[in-house]
Image (cartoon, rainbow, N blue to C red; front, side, top):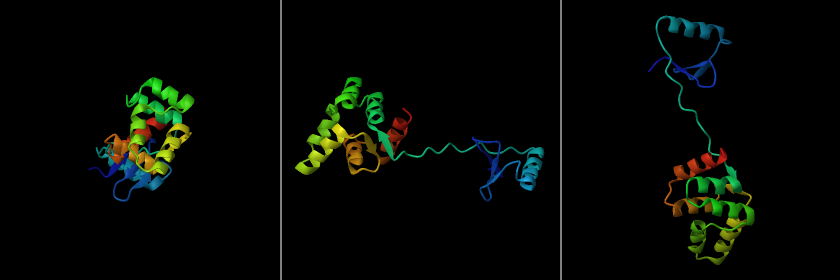
Length: 147
């Protein structure tokens, strides 16, 4: 491990010992870094960019990502966004709910929501029904937010 780590978003580096960001504006620290490089050292590569999980995605993003992943068809995604039709795989999740009030709430959510919240209990329920881990649900939301 090197004394410094490069950054992917700037020419500045991170000093590993204290995680300080060192750039040209930090005259003394930057000079120390430049001397370290002149001695033949190389900063470690940047860490992978952290991508936060969006707390909310639109209904269009939700259904489009489901279609991209072949969870539902493109026709089902369009119908869900255009008319509120619930795709078959999601309807099977709703059909498995035994409490009538919860079943109604799930139906209302899937057919009428304009946004889907990552931390909504039904989001975890759908993920579990698909056999997904919480990380996989996060990845779905990250990918959907990019559409």
